[in-house]
Structure formats: C-alpha cells, structure tokens
Length: 507
Image (tube, rainbow, N blue to C red):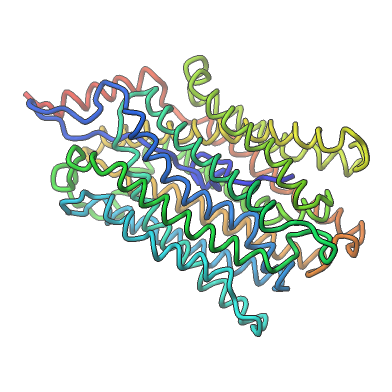
C-alpha cells in the first residue's frame, strides 16, 4: 500500500528514518541550572526546532515517492541499477553519520556544538537536491546510474551534516519524561505538514493527469519543478530553525564541559552493553529493511496495482497524513496509561498489518472493484490507520531514545547524543539499503516493464509486484519482538535523572 513518509521512530524511514528530539543533560552548577530543568519548554522554541524537520521530511518523502519511480519508470534506468545506486548512497550516508555525530559532540565554537553544522549544510543541500532531478537527456544506463549515485550521495551527505546535529540539539532541550514526548510531537506535526506539502500539493500542482500521460507521474516535465520547490523550502526551513533556536546556544553544554575523549570503539562497546539501546538498534534495523522495500515500490503500487491517478493519490494520501498527527497526539496519553514500550510494540504490529491488508484483499478478489463507491473510502481508512501507527511509533521511539541517552550518560559520564543518534541512523540506513536493493533487483527478476503506461502492464506482472511488496511485512512484524527487550520505564528514568542531577551538583 502506499507509505509516504518514514514510519519509524528513528529514520522518516523511519519509519525509519525516524530519531526524534532526544533529551540530554546539561551541566548543572550550584549557581545555574539547566535551561529547562523543571519547566516546560516555550512554544516558540519547540516550534522553531520542529520546523527543522521540514527539510529532512521533504528529502525523505521526495526520495520515497519520486526518485526511484522517476529514474526507473520515466528515465528508464533498470531496477537493479537504481537499487544499487540508492544502496551505495545509503551506505555512504550510514558511514558518515557516526563521524558527523562524533565531530559534533566534540566541536568547540562560540556558536555551540550543533548550530554551525546545521547552518553550513543548508545551501549545499538545496543545490544537490535540485541537481539530482536534472540529469542530461543524453545519458546512457551507466550515465544515469552514475548521476543517481553521485548526487544521491551529495544529498544524503549534506543532510547528514545538518540532521545529526539537529537531532542532538533536540536532545539538549529538556529532561522531563513527558515533555520529551511533547517535543517529539512538535517535530512530528511539522513533519506531517511537510509531507502534506510534498504529496498533496506537489502531486496536484506538478503532476496533473493529461491526455498525453495516463498518469501525471509519468510526465518528466514535473520533476524539475518538484526539485526547485523542494530545494528552496529545505534551505528556508533550516535557516529558520537555526535562527529560532539561537538563543539556546549560551545555555547548552560545551564539549569541554561534558566530554572526555575516548576511542570510538569504547563508545560503541558502551552503547551496545545497554540492553535498551540494543532493543531499539535491532528494531530499527528490521523496520528499515521493511521501509526500504515498501518505499521503493510505493509509487509503482499506486500507479500500476491500484491504477490511481496522480490526483487520486494526492487525495487519498490525506488519510495517512491525518492519521499521522492523530497517532502523535495519542502518544502522550498512551505513554501515561501504558508506557512507551507497550505503545511502540502495538504500533509495530498494527503498521504492517494496516498497510497491506487492502493489498491482500484485492489479490484474493474480496476488495471492492475500482468503480465501487467503497473503493477509495476503504483505501482512505486503511491509510488513516497506517498513519496513526506511524505517528505512535515515531513519537514513542524518539522519546525512548531520549531515555537511552540519559542512561548512557549515567553509566559512562559522557553526553554523546550525536554519536548515539548517528549510531541508530547507521543501522537504519544500512538496513534500508538492503531493502532498496531487494526491491530494485526484484523488479528486474519479476520482469516488470519500465517506461510503461498502466494499461500496457499485464495482470500477472502487477500481481508479482504486489507479492514483492508484501515481503516487507515480515520485517515489520519482527521489529515488535526486538522492542520487547526494551527495559526503561517511567520509574527507572526518573531515578536515573535524579542520580545524574545529584552527581553533577556535587558536594
């Protein structure tokens, strides 16, 4: 079915891609406490921080619904080469994440540890994003492959320079158990609005259905417009987020106050010894493989399996986009009632089920036909439930990782949010690369035709496409088993926070 954004708490992809704002502890002296030690964060701070998510969401959503489809079905690049290209870019991205996180954690600057990286990435990201969708017309298969690899690496590299410090900055804003969920919710709402901008506005405005193309997404003229609009919005979102959170810089910890340089292998070993970190790490990996498969085949399924027009895709996507903030808003009461671990396990089970039940129903011929009045409403409802599960998973995972970083500080005496966030992103991206490769090679193995109108594709080929997409469910369900081993609850988090505060205050 169609999954538009990352539906995972670590990456927006993330399902994912999807770490949210995580909490870290700032040095406490007898004369000055942390910025937001016991009170709620100002709304303007949470809004400014949340707007920074717009840039990553536009990148993630654009990759998921436009890029692979554009290069395979519009430009004619083979599925295998496209899958390998995206995999190479993701592996590069995964390797650079821990490096950027480590450097950011140790950075010395009068502008803080995070803001310089965030700001310097803005313009290069916009340029790389625009160029990615502008390959010359004369390129061969190898030429298209090289263009996709090169500019996908540039896009992912520049977003890493921005996004890893951005996530680490979010971790520094609050240490309150419930306020972490609120910060994650603000970030999630901004992500929903960005996804809506890309999907609803982008599809309707840049890919209208015409007599020339059965589906507007097959029209190459729309992609440069999407690229330009996305580049401008991403740059503006980053600048606004940096400017809106600049007043926090003087109150955040400096590297010299919080970090002792140790070999990277010791950081890795210390993180892996934490059972809750391992739980989220493995859960992220499993979900990322699932997301990689689903996101790669997402638009293929919409166009060829459901045979939806671009305007219908945009309209029905509203179901997912409405469900997502509902899930985000449900996270706080769910955490109070059931705690975070149970919430994310439920979301991990519901997400893959809701996302594929309609596909299975159509394969066994019990789903209403396309001319039925129930056809689009049922798809809308299924997408709504998928969105709720995605919102719950994203917000819960972000808040849970905040608790993990706190426990890591308590055990090691080091505040290393940048490193921990990037470590989670590392496994997510490597696993997502596997998912993209599986989907790309799978398209070639099932013999799915490139540059074909929906009416030209045989029913047997469409069925094989749907079955390939369903293989992602197994990984999604398996992630629930990984989350089962997460061990931090409310009482343990509050006790750890109290111990850290007492230790930092000293005698």
